[in-house]
Amino acid sequence: MPLYSYKVKTQRGDVVDDVVQASSVKDAASTLTSEGYKILTIKKVDQDAGGLMSGSISISEKAAFCRFIATMLRAGLPLPEAIDIIKDETKNRKLKKVLTDVSFEVRKGKTISSVLSKYKRDFDTVFLTMVKAGEESGTMDKSFDYLSRQLTLSYELIQKVKGAMTYPVVIVCAMAAVFVVMLVFVLPQLAQVFYDLGVKLPTATKFVLDVGIFVGKYTTEVIIGAFAVALVIFLLFTVQKTRNAIFDFIMKLPAIKGLVIQIDIARFSRTLSTLLSSGVPIMVCLEVCSNIVQQPALKKEVKLFGAGVAQGKQLSEIITSGKKVFPSTVVQTIKAGEKSGSLEEVLAEMADFYEKEVDFTLKKLTSLLEPILMLVIGVAVGGMVVIMITPIYSLVGGMGNF
Image (cartoon, rainbow, N blue to C red; front, side, top):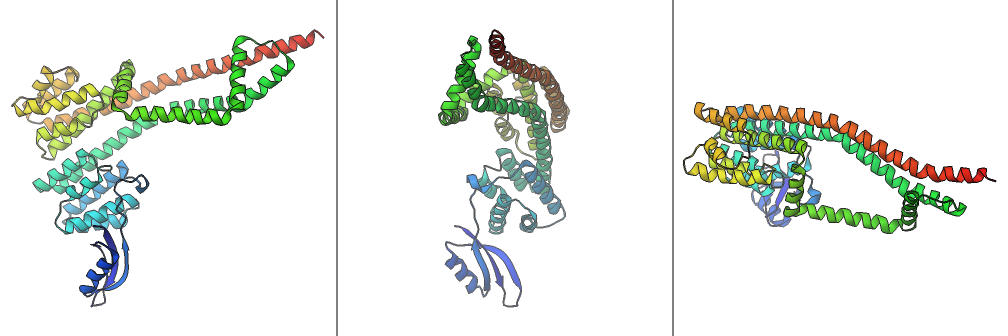
């Protein structure tokens, strides 16, 4: 049933804000009136959990939510009261809707993990598993504290990747924009001039100008065709087999392969460390970890780790006996952590190391991309100049004969 937020005046004259669950506005009003309240305002709460227009909750906002709620729980505040305080302070409309629902359901006796599981688009398996573990062990403050730290580190890693890719993306977009302007506006005009003057054109120039004339004549059709091709490519990316095939091709590139492996190891180590620290059983931890790695081969292999652990084997032993999806240093580090009984701490340190390695690799790739992009731009501009200047020289030479 939908929720309705209301503002009422009690028999003592106090004004109260809260939410009530009812089948309609009438039923909600009837319930409040029967309890002796004088209704001031009442309206339906929009609970669209997954709609495209409902917005989203960023990683940084989730990290802040976890940090605040952990602090409040440690201070001794009841969970519903802590959620209400954060709900009133947040600016994100989607998070406010979620917290309104959570506040109401928790007061009815439901667990916060069961309510958040309705919003899987914003709260992934790792988040829900850790919250559930905190509820079962009575350490909600620690679970939210771990989540806050993990989300903050994930956010920093994503920002590093985005920051490293900004420069190449801007350059490529600028090149594409110049190419489109030349193709749609410049080339059709030049082509008409050259053809009217009857200049003898080289094959390459003639081809480029013919393309320009075609685009100028059928601009609308070309734009529709370009959008259609982009849509087909987008739809292909939504198919799992296509994504895997593209991923396998990209993984054959040495520099990219090394970077993806480092990111996966960092995410695997960080997630496993955080879940184990929260008291989640290792088999559940490994099942969750299999969903957060990117490489299909690694994802498939990690899914098998739980079965080995169920048979009483050590994690390092299972990794060693299976396919070599992890570097030997990772296996030895996990083995050392198991022997010393400090697997969570060792995994956290390994995650720190590989996150630094990702940062270093990204900087190295960016510094390598810059001269390559400059070279590509130089070749493209030089080629265009040669193609367009050659007929102009022919035209000037022909005029000199008069």
